[in-house]
Length: 209
Ligand code: T5A
Ligand code: NA
Image 1 (cartoon, rainbow, N blue to C red):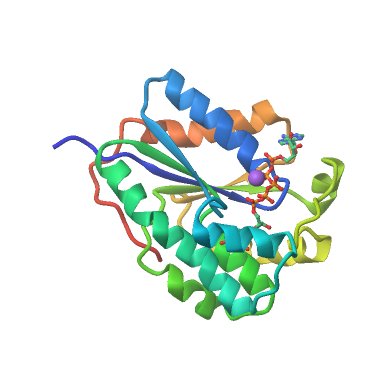
Image 2: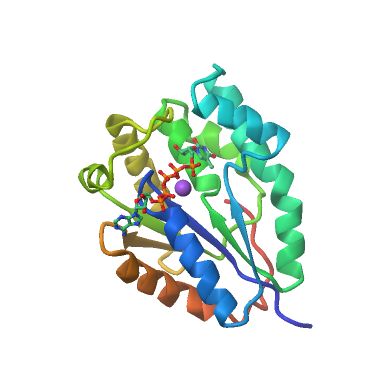
């Protein structure tokens, strides 16, 4: 039987350069002839994603638990497609995933365990690359935008929860990268982490968490 594709998640704080790095990684994988598909969470194009987008732009209000479950439902509505692609041998790269869901909602004051429960049994990334950046460095990048969570105090709390999450994974599955460096330097580290997975995996896909 041929190998399945690898499931790679890129996580990080706002302004850490996730979207920039995911695009560079996609181009590199394609140039190596490795089939790859990107997902971005939240995916604002689905019916659920449109509700999330409206909330993030402060055009609607929702109970903290309700929006948490919508973010999770947005992953579940795409989980089947992700599994299918992996089974066909395609490498899947996610720009944010379940860890963002837990980190942001816990930072708002919900319990960590409660936040984690709707994510349980989603496909687990084979490796998560966490792009870490200090609020000071993020500010140098033109600062945070206008969306709901883009405030320095919130970002500090989010960073603390991501640190807590990282302790639950061994070094092979959760890699923290200093994203405050030049784009090319971060991209080189991202590639070093991803390259070992490019021939696919024989081991079955794991589940969170
Ligand atoms: N959220 C998300 C939840 O609450 N629950 C969930 O379940 C999920 C999935 C939207 C919000 O939703 C929350 C988290 C977020 O607050 P989003 O749509 O992914 O999430 O939006 P952001 O991630 O906030 O998008 P950003 O644009 O802020 O961050 P990126 O993708 O990390 O950064 P990027 O690549 O766009 O770069 C930002 C800027 O910095 C420059 C870029 O050119 C750009 O201008 N840059 C660099 N500058 C200098 N050096 C480098 N190395 C640079 N890399 C990039
Ligand atoms: Na982004």
